[in-house]
Image (cartoon, rainbow over all chains, first blue to last red; front, side, top):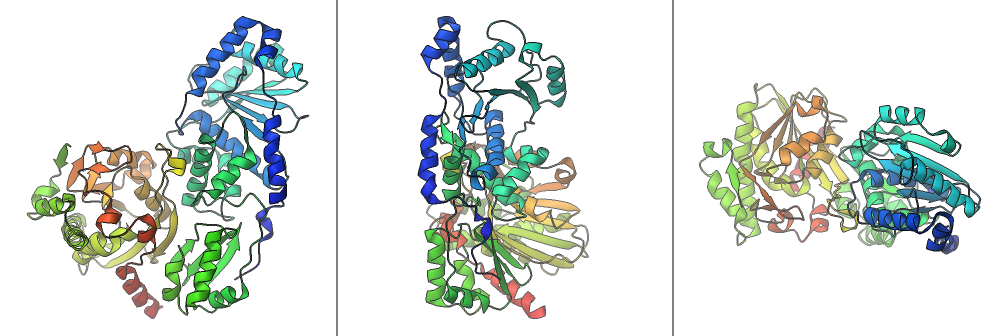
Length: 327
Length: 235
């Protein structure tokens, strides 16, 4: 049993949250005039049409969104522990725009083009994938930014084929990645161990149960889809996801909580009841697992303060008297 | 609102009236609860017909709202007819994050789970209605982490036309090959929010007398209290 605030909450504080969110406004956005100046009006119109086509997607369960949730989860450790400011953009005016990750002004911009098809080729000439990659690189160069441009495909064989056939002139900054696709987010998580590991990091305990992993990933997906996807800070999306109740997502900000001595004394005195804190959540067990649960809200919330208040008010002496508060 | 009745439906005389009671929005919670209990008795008898031996070990799992009514009826029918019955109850929060209708999740907030202690022949998953199968999938996925049953019985008075396939799609062949579905009626119509029509007459939480999902999750079923007290006294 423990009443102490666990250290793994992460070092970030509310004080620098606003500063980080403000960085979202400094993201490298591409303007019409830059594109027109570099590539001409015809290319600008092509990009605008491409952007209109992609921006109409309002569904959550898509290949592009699953991949973005993977990236958000993967980046979360750097955001929570490393205090990195990272902006994600999607479907903006750019040549490779399914996902753009903008870390810091001097880091390369990471662009992802996703293709959930059995047949994909680089092709040559205007509007081909290879030409889009090349132009994206040139556009970023004009803004003094390096590029890492990735083509993401759902077939491992296709990934090998596209890697072999990659045009020489884009090889320096391009790669092909395999990321599987399936009918549900959980099925993708089962097939992508690194994705699952990243979501486990975000989850409410060190060895989260399957339902908690699914909940955390699905809430993160919902938070991304309901955000301004043209310019969203990873911290902002994580905070929005965590604030959903339940989310079973660890608090992204370092907010201290206090399990009062009186509450601790009451909980400690209940026979066969054990509890611990992990990643900001209270996990409990009764009689070696006969009953088990996790409070659906984290310990930095008003709901947890209210839980403590109710425990102190009613002073339960047995599990039977306590259990109605464990929700 | 097309409804198809199963072969099972025609084996039990009173099921027609009981399903009508569920659909009747005028039926008060006490009447509704009793109908669910009696449907459970019938479903329990149907299950017994498929359980090959009185030496079988059975594990029955349900959600909190069904525990004292539908599941209780099934347990009553099985009592004394099989060698052992263990029981689990789940408190799920079923929701669409950020109101996105194509996203559904039903995490387990808490659970009561009796130890299996031995091989389980039949795992019975009970639910008042199976629509998108999200809750059943979550609870079954959790249970098979610790129980390896020979057969899995999925039991509900009413299911949606696509529920069987949806549930199968969520599991590996080795798991869904163990499935056997027990239901009385299959409905085709479902609203965007996932309510099956006529189904079981609307939101089961409200029909049973709970205010909403939070209210049903604060409920501790009598059956859980009784079984737990008995088990704790033996431990």
